[in-house]
Length: 172
Image (cartoon, rainbow, N blue to C red; front, side, top):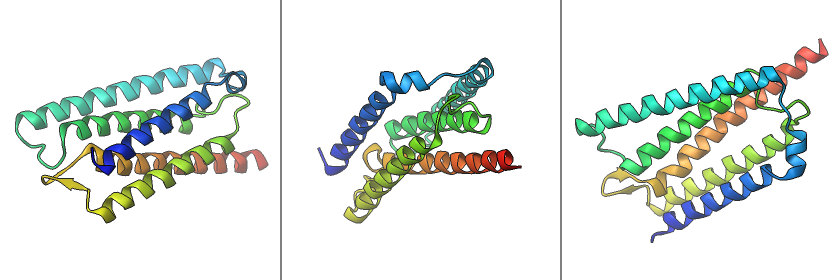
């Protein structure tokens, strides 16, 4: 296994630790959504699912016509899944259904900021080591950190803008 594979495994372990952290009982007590938020989240899940379905269909069509030559199949599927999750999160943020009733955005700023920096660092390191392309294709090990950094950055920016707007509206 190359260095990129170990980095991807480390990233996945980090995501599992973050998921464990977010699922702790003290966090769950603070995580209560009202009925409207639950409806919005359900719609977000639906949008994310149909986005994933559409992207998978597009990937199948590209594979059938040999139009997917610059990335590996695993990386393409991973990117489609991450894009659909990012769309779900951004939809929930924009419709005030991401944060729970007593939820605080500060925790998420720190968590998403950490992941942007971590994934960005890993991608830059892969770029400097010349491990971006393998046999002329972008692989999962080298491309996943870039996709994750961009997606977390999009989520972070959306959360920052929405939080700023909500605070500005509350002041008026």
